[in-house]
Amino acid sequence: MMKYWVVFCWISLACNDGVAQHDSTYFNSYENELTTRFYFSQKYTTFRFNDETNDVLLRYVPNTTLNMGVGATYKWATLNLAYGFGFLNPDEHKGETKYLDLQAHIYGRMFLINLLGQFYNGFFLRNEELRDADGTYYLRPDIKVREVGASVQYMLNHKRFSYRAGFLQNEWQKKSAGTLLLGWQLIWGKGQADSTIVPSAISQIPSDAQTQQITFIETGPSVGYAYTLVIKKNFFIMASGTMILSFGSNVIEDTERNRSSSFIPNFSFKTFAGWNSKQWAISLTWTNETVTVSSNANNQTFSLNTGNLRLNFVRRFKIKDIPIENIHL
Image (cartoon, rainbow, N blue to C red):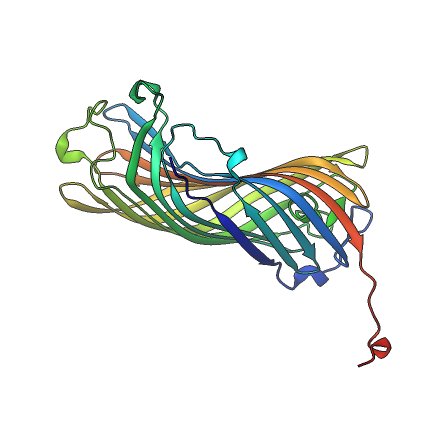
């Protein structure tokens, strides 16, 4: 079965807050050096459906690729290039997913900015009882998911805490520190299918309550906390959690078109762990954003989980500035 291989490239403009002063006893900055990386990356956007009344819980998953790539960071710019090579992605009877997944996580000194633009066509269901005799999962090539959004967070203790140490690897957190996070999020999304979302083989939902499309928009303030534990100066573990107090409006279409509004919290989680030094670094990072949409009419809940799991191998190089007066034409 043919797969849709993805080549992705993104440039992170980490604001202009990099000039903000920091406490060098807590972390070192290597912005003036070239930070190069070799990495593996797995992006995903999963579509979850829960009907409490009829006891139905489904988790649709896209068949995304494990990508291998290279990248570099210098001053305010980051460039990453990766490709889903065939030897990393054997056919596991999960169908075909065509997708464009744009995730930009901009780690400034004071601000953290997340940008999402995701367009997925084709999912499969992990339920073992629905697999074919040859091992093929229950496939839904007709399911489409769209999600576009942005969030910004301000780090109150930015002089002692560094997100860049794990995610961009151009800084080195040498002492444990934490920070309170305050921000705002705006998300628009849409999920749709040519037929009902719940397979007829396991559906206990009446036909007049079968959902085929949902569109939503949510926004609200966020509050969170992040902390990095440094062990023997070189080893580090960081975890951060954020709750978004979202108010949203959604339109759910089955045999009728129903609009409702709800207040429901969303959650964002980031973590990294690894080893850091003056020239070398290794880090494992994971980001996950959850957006939940509730239908008051049918007691149904939809949620989108968006994330990225990455393993980075890093080497930093010093760059010597060339004086302009030494350049001869």
